[in-house]
Amino acid sequence: MKDGENTKSRNFVTALARGLDILRAFEPGSSLLGNQEIAERTGLPRPTVSRLTYTLTELGYLHYNQRLGKYHPAPGVLALGYACLAYYGVRQVARPLMQELADSTNASVALTGRDRLNMIYLENCQGPGSLTVRLDVGSRIPLATTAAGRALLAVLPEGERGYLMEHIERKSGADWPAIRDGIEQAVRDYRMLGYTVSAGEWSDDVNAVGAPLTLPDSTVVAFNCGGPSFHLSRERLHEELGPRLKNLVRNVETMLVRS
Image (cartoon, rainbow, N blue to C red; front, side, top):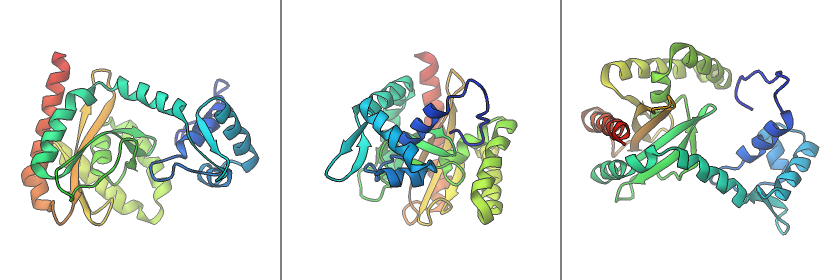
């Protein structure tokens, strides 16, 4: 269920929400899950999980591997994913520019959208070397500590950003003061520089810059450009990658308006 959302409305279908929570439990790197693992990830009772996984299997959204006693996503889920990606025409417009930036910097350049308190990869381009951070389409990264997530937060209206920060605080525990400071700094950076930075805050050895883009329908997505910290120093983030990513977003925005 959506973080912090009031689910007491009479129109809210709890069974549907639980079924979607089960599908969300499958992520890159963990595509085979048993009922017990799904129950642990979703917080749902195992009998409920068993009924829902059976139903999702019958509908073609999960496949049951009898030998392993586990489930994995079936083509029905893939069809939904492609329908979603097809909606984001920005992918086709941005990809050549993203690949050019990735090749010239030997970095990873990604297009992301928000999924609850995460950012999910909608597109990803890799540089020619082995130094890039390799995440596939569909991978999730945190909203609060990554350059892309902070870029999205920085451009949201204050009320919406505050709402999300309340839920980030609930999940962050003792780490919240540092995370809050990082987000507030990102807002200032975006206003002054046009991009945000995450230097070792998501992963100790990863540095990145991020820049948001508001689509014509008001949906906000975010680009990032990053890689290992020994390859992309803080100085390089500000002197090269940040300005170039900001320029990429400006060019994509112009091309979308013309299309």
